[in-house]
Length: 166
Image 1 (cartoon, helix red, strand yellow):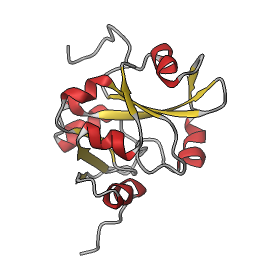
Image 2 (image 1 turned 45 degrees about the vertical axis):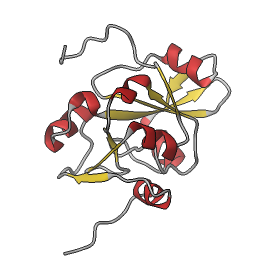
Image 3 (image 1 turned 120 degrees about the vertical axis):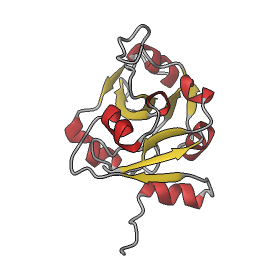
Image 4 (image 1 turned 30 degrees about the horizontal axis):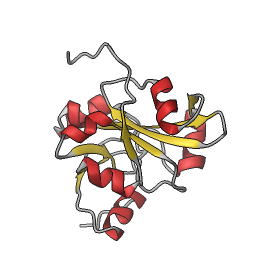
């Protein structure tokens, strides 16, 4: 059997001696986080998506939020120390991060960008994030995610989002 190819995210975690669980699933193209959680059996509330934004200054920021929630760009801008943030266009994702849509991990991007994880992650022992390619999810502690991407925690999700899980 062929050895599993490691992603930059996995290599970075191993270099820092951070324990993680890799969960693979069959998928040929982008599917959203809700479907990924369903396929892998990961609890929806503990599953997080990675969003890349650009500030007024031109600096890129990585935001990690629950898959069933929406980002509040004003809160995220405050947490990043920017006047405003805008979402990165999908076409720009690969050249800037080295990752494709649906496989974008906050860990192991081409460059280390300032990263903010939603504060809700801190209530869990383990969270699920993209592993750096479509078909791979990583499970690890929120503190370890934060350590690996040199991030910080802040409230960056929108209030009263209409979630199908409420």
